[in-house]
Length: 356
Image (cartoon, rainbow, N blue to C red; front, side, top):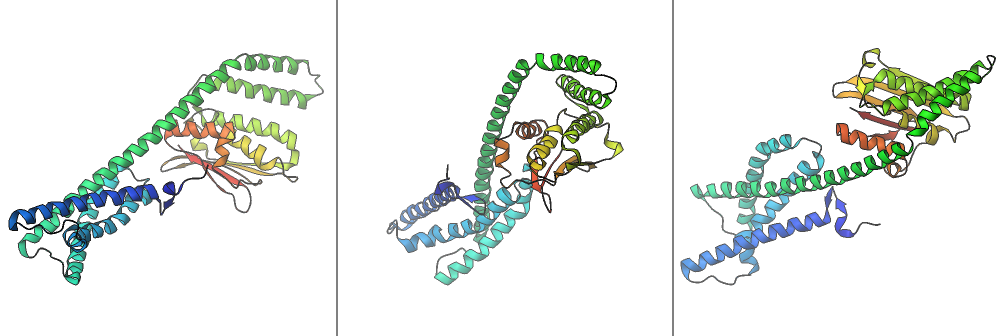
């Protein structure tokens, strides 16, 4: 469904948000103008015309227009450019932004008032042109932070709902498939025992496939496994795929020995590797290479699965199509508040990475 004009965005700010913001400023500018109009009538008995354009601009229109123009880049900086920053850091940034806002507004307001012949405060009473803009700054950004918290909370509720739905589907699927892995695991061992000694390669492949099912059974009972076990599972999976693709499938694995004992959720890498084989390399006549890189970094454990396959144009749409990538993305978001990142693998293919 195409987004309506109101939900389109410019520089990260949606049209509907901008309209609401203009309405917010018009309300306060009008309220301030009416207050001054009533105040003039109380002092001299003649308030004048309420909605005289020049009087409105003199009272509040100019001042609030300047506040709006100065606020917009601050809004964009805090809620779009630095959106990934923690709330605490963005709030602390107001220590710099608030005095800058007041200073720029005060100098601009006096300059334009002088130019248009409007009234402005002089002498010691100019303190009101510091106090009131600062108070308005705190008010408007208090509302903006509350609004952003509401939006983020709604997204969080939506994601949690999707996770609960996915968890329910996974539990139902697990119940349906509960018999199959045990049955197949035992059958594989029986078949392997019946293979003649001369067919050692076939016996080995059956044993590898049996190990894959055994690992899946174990993984369903634990929250985390050593990285070494997960990597061993992936290697066996790729070994069986290599029997199918032969020289069309090349594999590079770069993992430091120091991270082998790190604990990670089971079945985290295999869906990414399977995606690279199935959607990246399978359709290519000459095949390609799958590279797995795992490194210890300052912000955690970095994982990357890269292939030299056909690549993907619409990298967001893929999460709505495949079960493996979608479930992996949701697991990462739920357990580590991180996500999968898909980028081009120059000169050809796809890179999928994440950090936990």
